[in-house]
Length: 320
Image (cartoon, rainbow, N blue to C red; front, side, top):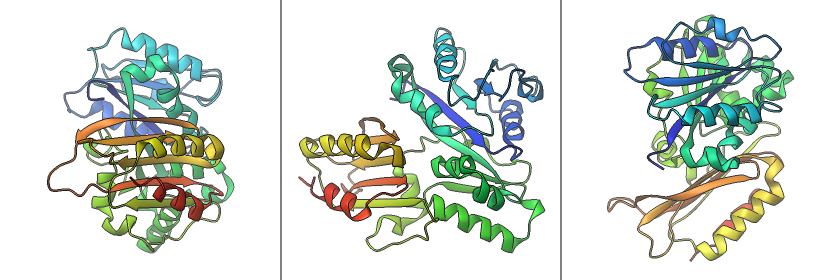
């Protein structure tokens, strides 16, 4: 995994501040080189003109949103980029404001050539503090963008009161209790909070909210969004777990927006880490369990219409 090129998917509803954040990334003196893929809805892209004149190469995809016809374009662009491996440290894919991030994220699991050389580092969603609550009510894409996020940049906080801000954060937490939220004005935040996050590593989530995997710890859920977390203090039998997680994602795939987990297998010193988008799963053995950490297996699902009790029971039935 470590030698794969990290890819950050940058999403957010129209006008939230994605281009502002992208310009910040490209113009700060971080000493890294980024290849940027921008996608604009419509025949003629204008985002390319808005992105500052950095020495990074900007690739543009037109004729539709990144989430449908353009997946082939994305694969071709990534393929072209990889032939120049070594010229850049990471890739940023900026989606149009109307995009569902799922198909973009799936590209990094589904296309084997892409999966061999690139890894999804994080989905970063820029949200407009003033208008997000309205968008969550009338735009399903905005809700999906929040649900998918590993990192949420809650932007334009200068336009709302502290009470309004708390209300917006509660709405976000109801949809996605696991993402890291950063309050910003003009997307001003350390770039390290957005890039190179290795964001599907649950350690970060647990450090942020230690009780989040405890039994009986309930979040206020959005009307149609759920988050389910289950943990087992000990090893999981891979002969049971692998068929179960595969079957679950095939059966419930359309309803599972994101899933991720860290699992301990018997007699295996390394942690099995997986993440998924709908029906697409990706996982491998990563670093060794440290002497100072408990071998706790834990899984997280964010989605709609999921049977919480069934998922919990089935996962715990995979115990070694």
